[in-house]
Length: 446
Image (cartoon, rainbow, N blue to C red; front, side, top):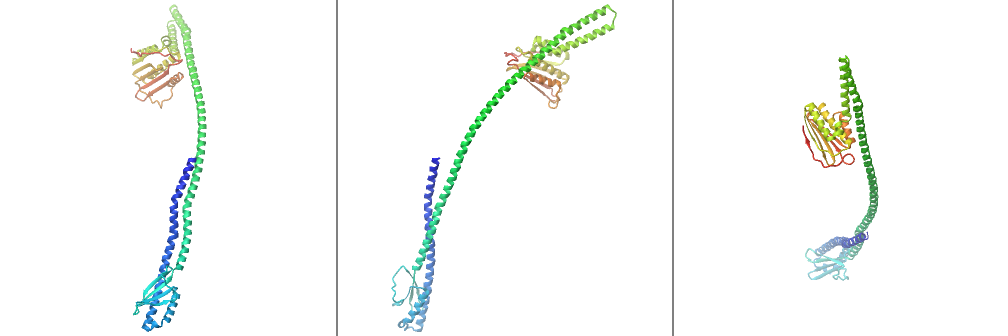
């Protein structure tokens, strides 16, 4: 701030120095030009006055010469009185008439006529035979006094104008500097306030960021906990399904099998005939339904052979039963969580069933691979396809999405009318859900 004030002072002094010559020029012009113009104008009027007086004196002399050609020189008193009257009327200082022989008349006679700067001489040749020259002396002292008074007056005016011309820019500069200084002080204060607000805002942002990080960490912990609970729920569901399937197989299945044996014995020992065969058919139907229910609840191949081999067997059975052109690529998998295996198997099972039941596909391709701790399942068909955006949320498609989300995965369905359908499933296998393992993809074909 001190350096800025010193720089502003130097600028003010420089402006004052540059304004001084202009102020002096204003004083000279205002104090000198008007008096000079006035003196020149008045001197012209004085010259006209002298010419007028000289013309009247010359006319008077011409009339005297015409009346008294030779005698007027001896009776000059009357002519002198007349010339003096004209002189006083024109306010001249003196009148001198000179011819070839020398001075003829001098009015007033007692006045000395030196070559003084206080008089202005005007000459005129008198016409006629006299051949004299009339010299009129006009006083310049009044003109000088008036010119001096005007010069003094305009000198004061010029000094006032010069002072105003010199002072006004300095005052304007002082005012501008004062306003600039005030603005700079306000700017400095605003800068300090802004710095304080910025520091406060940074602290608040840091505090808020810390709160958001804590909240995000808490959400992540809760999300992980929810995912673990979901996975545990799927495990419990699958365990319950296996228990129900085991119960159906061990109790209901065995009971129905025993019942069928008893009916067969009854048929052999009695004469029931067609009625016994009807009972056997009904028992066979119940046994088939029980086996299918057991398969739906807990596929034996999944728990006994694992996900990879269960999918291979599923594809082979489906090709044998449907006669479709079905290809599959199933990688060798590491040990996986039972919930993840069950979810992946059921999604593959549903996708294959939808391709046959709704898509009317003639060719199917299934791929199961592992990369970067992710399990990826792809089911592609060449069926009729459908509009994914406009299709209603069916139970099959909605169930596949729910299973994928419960396991922390993503299900993507791509389809268009007449272009087939592609179902892609990505499931994480790291952490508690699956184990890491170096895998070599293996392609299996029927």
